[in-house]
Image 1 (cartoon, rainbow, N blue to C red):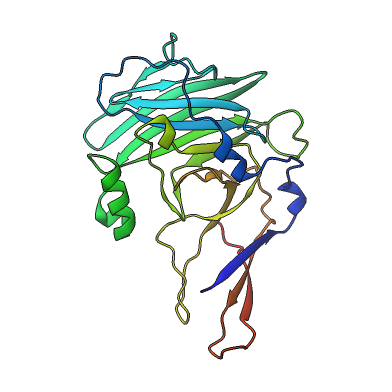
Image 2: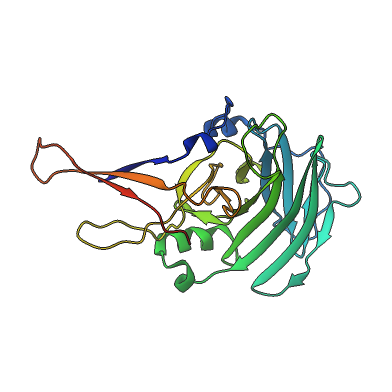
Length: 266
C-alpha cells in the first residue's frame, strides 16, 4: 500500500486563516424549511455551502425537468423565482442555468447544473458504475458550476470570484441524493487542499501512470470535491509536490520514498 502527501510552492497563496475543517460539514443540518409539491416521485437533492465556515446553505432539488434553487438561502423552495426549467432536456442530458445566488453582501454568479447519463464504458470502473446504477433508475451523474464571490476577510491575492466545477473526484462521481438526509454537501470557498481527479486513477509499481491532482475543497459524499478552475487563480509557477512512500519487499526495512513535482497542467 502506498501513501502520498502533497505540498505546494507559494503555499501562502493557498492558506486559509480559518478554523473550519472538512469534517465540520458532517454537522451541517440537512433540513429544508418548505418544499413544493414535486411532479416526480423521486426528486434529487444536493446542498451547497459557502464560505470558510459553511454558514450560507443553498439547496438544489431536481424534479425531473425542473430545478428548485434556494437562491437566497432561507430554506423556502416554494418562493417565486426558485423553480427553473431545463434549457435542454432529453433522455441523456439536462441543462439548468440557475443564475445568481445571494449570500449576504456577496453574490455568487453563473450557477449551472447538468445531469448526464453515463455508461459502463464512460465510467470504466465496474464498482463505481454499479454504485451509480443502484442510486438511480437510470445511471445519471451531475455537474455543478458556479463562480463564488470571496468574503471580504479573505485577504489572499486572488480574483474577486473563484470559479468552481464539481462533477467527481478520486472517490467517485457526483450523485444527487434521494432525500435531504442523503444529499451530498458541496463546500465552495472553503479551505483548500488537494485531491485526485479521477476514480479510474491507479498507481502500479513498475508501470507508468498518469496521476491528476487538483486544488479545491472537500465536501461530504463521493464526487463532492469542488475543483478550482485555476486559470488566473493559481500562479503558473506554483507546482504540487507529491511524496510517495512504498513499502519495502523486505520485512522491517524502511519504505521506499520518492518525490515528484507536477509541472504539467491539463
